[in-house]
Image (cartoon, rainbow, N blue to C red; front, side):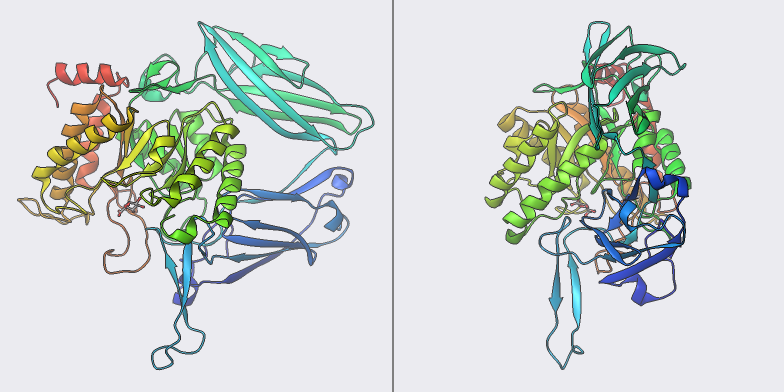
Length: 565
Ligand code: BDP
């Protein structure tokens, strides 16, 4: 099997596509003998879902969770002069305590099923692609090394304040010394320090902001160059970061103290052949399509994406709602102590990985959990509270599909994220009801909580090339009409409390086989091959008009002035 990739769609075997259980990877490698005196680390960037790793037949590490990196020091397992073998067993079984959760049902009727027959039941709407989805790396550091760096930034007038904290690790006879420098894009040092933690002021900095805010130089990235010196030798780390702030008020989302309106999409990591495997060409294509559409923000629905994708978001100036794999937390036994402990751990891994990225403006702890179930209250109080403790600088939320039941979780969020499917999952075909139902529903949530609201999903399944006039469900005409009605309500609420909109979905994507999905979910405005359906042009024209004024208030004025509502 190629790495990185999902193993499911690579062969012509149905058994491999639909496989549930242990898959084994194994390969030989050599290590540079000069690494003998260094610390050698084996790192997996994603193994879906549960992974056990051996080096030269000795157990090295076990990791629970499919979308975040894990690593271990392997010096004691390596042969620096001969051939080595790494073996990985990956199991894609989802249980009530995994994220996402799932269940296995054993079918015991011998008249209907052979002995031991079972099925995997998913609680999410995407294919459970599996395998080594991202890179596996072997890297080395000196034995005294930089374990972690945290950078947060503030803006005071025309000054950028860079707070940093460096955590050195390792055995040393004398404490290591450090040199910290902030380097601008032209390679010049604009601030420095010799302390492990502290503040560095940058006068008149270039700020990081999304490219559609149309200011001078968007997405400006600095480098924090950290040189740790110890008897073990220098460890030099270059951390890209941006100077920016994110805040929410009762009605607004502010980036660098300026109102930001998210004109976005929700996505998936999904493609033909590679499944969820990292694919550089696909990443480049997707960012080109995002820019082509005029998107300034996307949600990593419904799990953390590859770091290479977030690198592009940082560099190209696209804001991100960074979502945990907490999708489908809907059954009572998904709210137990084992699930909670795992969810807290996953939030820790996610924040540790992505905390220094300027593109990440919001943490999403979950998608569509049963927030009308009383059990969700204590569970999410803990998950959201924990995430805020891990990172007090960003708003924290979860994505809610509760329409009008009592809700136990929205009370804890900084910004309300709602998925709405009026005229699709309810009153299907009745686009004439969308404005009335959506408008009333949004006002109700706003009045109850007095917090800003973002629509994080709305959409209709559409088979590319299917046409009918007047519109009919599943046709391209229906998707255009449906979205147009949503846009009218968005325009009426923007500038009041609505701070963003995200269509579901950027592109069609694969799901489990079933009678409500025709070879996958077809709510993409692009096909799975990234070709536009008619609705993509509607969105493109809408989003490009918003460019000059990503502030909701400005956008309303702009729309009035050109008479588009
Ligand atoms: C929402 C889910 C999303 C689904 C979508 C749909 O958040 O994962 O794919 O509905 O049904 O409820 O298309």
